[in-house]
Image (cartoon, rainbow over all chains, first blue to last red):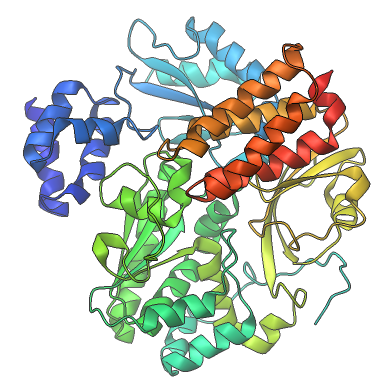
Length: 154
Length: 388
C-alpha cells in the first residue's frame, strides 16, 4: 500500500488533487504492478475525494487499465482484421503452446499474461503484438519461442 | 483544379525541408493571424481525422473565443483498424506536427497544448518528449508562449471522438458529450478547446510552408491537397502513401492491389466496402470518408469473416452510453451469426440493415452512426457469402 500511496502523491503533485489526475494515477499504478486492485481504487478515491465507484467505473472503461491480476509481462496480440488475415491465429496458438496457457490467462509464475487486443496501429506490419509497451511486428510462429525466452531470462 | 481522377503520388508532408527546424513557425508568426487563417481557408484544407470540416473555419471560430485559458489538442488517438499514418508522422516528422500545433496556438492565442497519444503508442513517448523539449527551447527564442504536454490514452477507440477524448483527459469514462456546445465553445475543463488530427496539424504547417495556391493545386475541386493513405491487407505495397485526393478505385487497385482484389475498404471499418464491380465508378474521397485507411481484400478472403471481425470490434468498443449503439452492435453481430448458421432466414438480413440504419439516425456519436456504412455495403454486395 505504501508504494501505491507514493504513486498517488507523486501524480497529485504534478497534476493537482483533481479528477483530471485520475488517469495518470491509474496509469502509474499499472506501470508499477500491471493491474489495479480494488484496495488500490479505494485508496485513489480517498486521495481525490471522489467515490470508489467512480474510480472503478473509469478504470473498467479502458482496456489498458486492468483490474484483474496480470503477469509481469502482458502480451497483447492484435486481433483486428488485417492482422487476423495475416495469421494472428497461428501466433496465438504458438504463444499458447509456449506459455502453456489459454488466451486470457496468466502463467502460474505470474510472469506472462496473454490477451487479444483491438488494432494497435501496426496493420502494415502484421501480424503484430505488444509485450507491455514494446511492439513486435511481422511475427511468425517460429519466432515466438525466441521472443518469450528473452523475457523469461530478463 | 480537377486532376481527372487519376492516381497521383505526391511528396509534400514528408518532403525534405532545407531550413532550420522551426523556420516555418518563425516565418508564420511574423504574419498577421487573420492572414494565416485566410490562407488556410483558401487552401481548402479539411480535417484529416475523417469528419472533414474545413480547418480554417475551425481555427477562426477558435480565435474568436474571448477566454484567456484555451487549449490546442492534437488528437493522436488513431484507433481505426487499418490506420497508422499518425504513427508515421509522429515518428518521422514530429516537428511538422508540432509546428502546426504552434501555428494554431499563435493564431488562436492559446497557451496550452496537449498531444493525446493512444496507449498502444506508449513506446513513442520518449522520442516525442525529446522533440517537445527541443520545441520548447525554440519557442522561447521565437517568443511564443505555448507549452505542450503529452497525455497518455488508456485504450479506448471511442476516445478518438473529440468530446470523448476531452472527457478522458478530465479523468472520466470516455463517453462522448452532446453537441452543442462544441469543444471550441466549451471543451477541456469547460474552456475553448481546438482538437485536430495529427495529419491536419502537419498539413496546416505545409500550407504555411508552400502557400495556399500551391497546396490548392493538388486534389479535386471538392478535396484539395494531399492525403496520407494507410494501406494494408492483400497488397504488396503496404504502408503509408501520400496521394492526391480524388482517384478512381480501379486506379488505386491497379497500383496497390495484388492482382486479385475483390474489395477495398475505404475509411477504415467505419467507412465503406467497395466491391470489384464498382471499382470503375467509385472515387476515393467522394461520398466516402477522408480518413485514409484503405484495406485491400483479395478473392481468398471471406467477407463474412471480415464483417464478423468488424462487428466484434464495434460491439467491444461501443462505450455503452447510448442504447442504439450498445445494443445495436451486439444484435448485428448475433444477427449475422444466426443467418450464417441457418437459424434465421435470409430475409433477416433486411431487418439487420434496417437496424443499422436506425443506429445511424439515433446513435449519439460517430461510432454508432457509422456502423451502417460497412455493414450495408458488405451485406448488400456480398449477400451470398453472408448466407452460405
